[in-house]
Length: 309
Image 1 (spheres, rainbow, N blue to C red):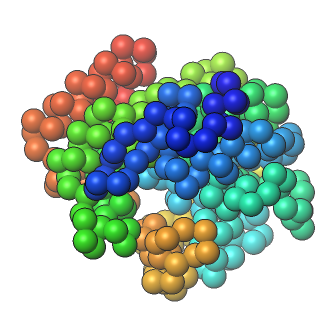
Image 2: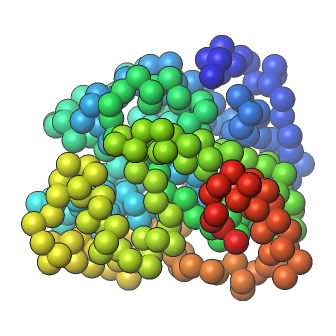
Image 3: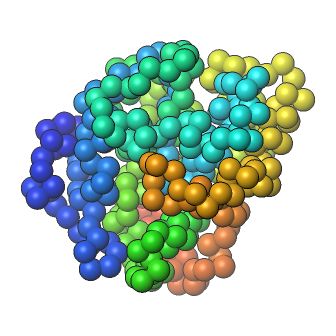
């Protein structure tokens, strides 16, 4: 990645309209980014130096990030997992480009410099030098592209602008298929971390949302071992899985709050909708499903990643 790209003025970057008349994404290193995050992404790429004990949760937006944050926080800080009942997962595990590097080039000091957990939506292709130079652990979660699309569509339509200018589903579908969505193209984002997990399996844990939903006990136990916080028995694993279930988390007052955090325009409750697998079937036509499946076969299956259809 040529870091000089991130230092350019927005006026020098390729841009495309993705929603409404004046909403643009800007292309940086092959990926489409929201303009309000480009400078903070630049700071992360240039200045973030993860230490070996750091844990980075990476994901494309709307692929299970909130749940993953809850699970990993509970695994690493097992004696403090009760904090999830009074703190939103995104406040316990801050996003590098949204909460940490917004105004400064350094990570603020924390009470415990070991076992720090951060998250990011930055593609590996932009963050490669940072991650390749560190022994930190990376956990990447991905989700079926059709469910990712529908979840993104719902999420964007919670923005204030959507009250007057809803993001139409047919527009969202077309933009997604052309890679024109925040942090997109989705397929390139996923494959960047997928390839990294194959090259550095001791440092990168790649998991799908569907795997986690189908067998959380097995995969949470695997996560504990990968992160260096193994469980003593299945009872401990079950306790973490239960405390991080959608039903439990979504009913906490902090996660039902209509108050917006300082770091994002939407209220806390916007991060909890349904969490279902296969919800796209309620919104996408058979023709659209086949269109996306054909794209998935081209982008994933042809490269040996048989997932997403």
